[in-house]
Image (tube, rainbow, N blue to C red):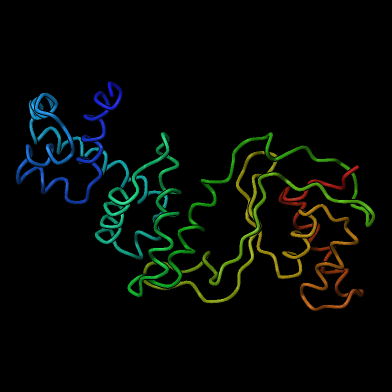
Length: 267
């Protein structure tokens, strides 16, 4: 009971900050609002001693910081949706879910995880926007940790061996070429496969791959030998294993190794 009693003002302040109607309710009847939030008379008196204006200042401070980091990380989404609509989305996010992380840089990822299903079911939101939000966060969300990248083996690839995969590498597929377009011009429709990773110098790298290369990478990431991965990629793309496919696979491997998505043959 003592712990719950001590936490009541914290939960009440969080509600004042988070709730979409928090500011309006403070302005209308601050004491009634705090009573509804479960504060006893002593806690209400203590919080009201700050004054409603101070409470609203705390609310504005939090909302401004969250909104600014979302606008910064999702600049294209914000320009496409419009700042007023994105501001409403941030308010709705804080009201419905709130921030879970202690790190401000992780808030845009939490916001997108909440917003994507909402946007996907909303006909007023441009169809490409949910995927654009994911794309815009890639360079920020990839781990920047040399231990996750891994060491290059310095061994040439061989058919009977697996290939070491960079631990930060992600394969993503989109329904638009999200590298193009702006708020006035939607990105062109068309399947886009991207490999993204941190290279050995910790730089963000992005590589467009075709369906064959994407399937080849996926098979190698599952631990298949290069030979098995080639056959898996051929089957996945409906191609025969022959000189054209082997040549394409060779170029794909070289490109993936060039950006450090792959780090050489396993020993």
